[in-house]
Amino acid sequence: MAKLDELQDIVVQTRRDILRMVHKVNSGHPGGSLGCTEFLVALYNEVMDLKEGFDMDGKDEDLFFLSNGHISPVFYSVLARKGYFPVEELNTFRLLNSRLQGHPTTHEGLPGVRVASGSLGQGMSVAIGAALAKKLNGDDHLVYSLHGDGELQEGQNWEAIMYAAGNKVDNLISTIDRNGQQIDGPTEEVLPLGNLKEKFEVFGWDVLEVAEGNNLEAIINGLNEAKSRTGKGKPVCIILDTMMGNGVDFMMHTHAWHGKAPSDEQLANALSQNPETLGDY
Amino acid sequence: MTKYIDQGKNDTRSGYGDAMTELGRTNPNVVALCADLVGSLKIQPFIDENPERFFQIGIAEANMMGIAAGLTIGGKIPFASTFANFATGRVYDQIRQSIAYSGKNVKICASHAGVTLGEDGATHQILEDIGMMKMLPGMTVINPCDYNQTKAATLAIAEYDGPVYLRFGRPKVANFTPVDQKFEIGKAVMLSEGTDVTIVATGHLVWEALIAAEKLEEQGISAEVINIHTIKPFDEEAVLKSVKKTGCIVTAEEHNYLGGLGETVARTLTVQHPTPQEFVATQDTFGESGTPEQLMEKYGLNNKAIEKAVLRVLKRK
Image (cartoon, rainbow over all chains, first blue to last red; front, side, top):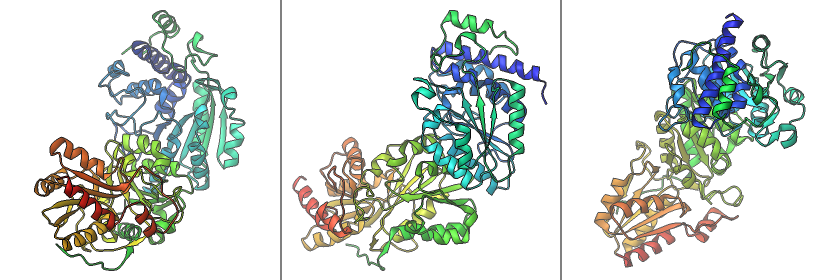
């Protein structure tokens, strides 16, 4: 296991990347990105079994699919810091002719991305397909996916949730980023999701909850527990309770930073709360 | 004109099903998906021989398109099949984002296209699918004319790397193309040469175009008949060469005139060689219940309609 403080350094640097990326172009989604930073840092740097380099087929390695594509800033930062492409390229986020589109795509050939996402609700289906291909190929690696909680309002998810359980897609670990917020407000006000754990369970999934979704150790323990439950006839769901905007005090406890960039002063304040660790791009 | 013989009526969807059986034996990467319409899509033999390579998705077409996209990651060649209506409009955004924009090697195989599925009516018919699918960047759109050609097209798209929309139908229709004809994506097929008018047709309307050409020949009119099985990429050269000889053209398709083959032809001609054109297509309407023959008559999609369109366009030369 990488030392927790090493992972924490990546977390802090990733926060800085996210904040600087969205500030530069005055657009993008910092809130959800910051909420999932610890999860993605842990997943890519501690949990997944990854090959050197990138190829689309991803045989003999674990795969990850980001369904809630609007948190592209954290995805791009984690990929770059992992070595999929130069960190300097984070400077091109959302600019014309960039590989770092507003929402992740394969269209420009950015290493690390295997499907476009942004129009919500599609990622679990794709992850299931990739998991089925792994089974056909005799590849015992796992497929991970991440979904927003508000995203579960899209009906295609429930087609996928039903399919994965009914067909024993047990090499899939889907994580729900339960931050309780969506663009128009709290999920419980916009469209209540109800008891997510029970919903997944009655659909036939093995569900575990990680209450401290911004705690690296809790996340790693949860992911390892989820891994241990794969291969047993059920897809595995992690419900991860996260704090939108985590690590920046004024971005927490609100949905205001879902799709809004910080001003110059706000950026300076946010960066001061997250001192440089691995070096800015 | 060149004469064609109906080798025995058959449905184009059986061409798909029989090709899938063949692909199951010859290409281990081919996998099949279906949304609760196995019987209609004629893929039971593929399933019997390759149960591990078949995915019954249930009545969940959006999920089917996403799973198909995912299966390509790992090298599979998914053939996702259902009715044309449910394979396009119902799941347009899934196809757009997860397949077309993502450049996935998915074959969307759509049966029961047009009005000729008949009695089920407009909820199950579709006359807009060619338009929707050809507008997607990178999407190949194919509408073969008979059993033999549908079978050949199905085999051909397995060898092509990229998203494809393959459109075919329900009723038994004339089977007249050579059984061994190689299918070249994007390459029009000259069926009969003529000098007075060009008729380009796609899908079920190709056979009707040949009947119309015979009737026109009896009236002393020499029609050139071209089978446009691939609407995108479109064989501009074949059409331009023909209209430069004949000076006028009729397009024929089981589809709305908006967005179909006719508009692709019109765009090509407008830019490169303005030519009088008449459209045999539905007139921005939904279909309805009826037998295939009744519907083709009512909606002007048969050889009589083509013949009339030829007589109209000849006056505009």
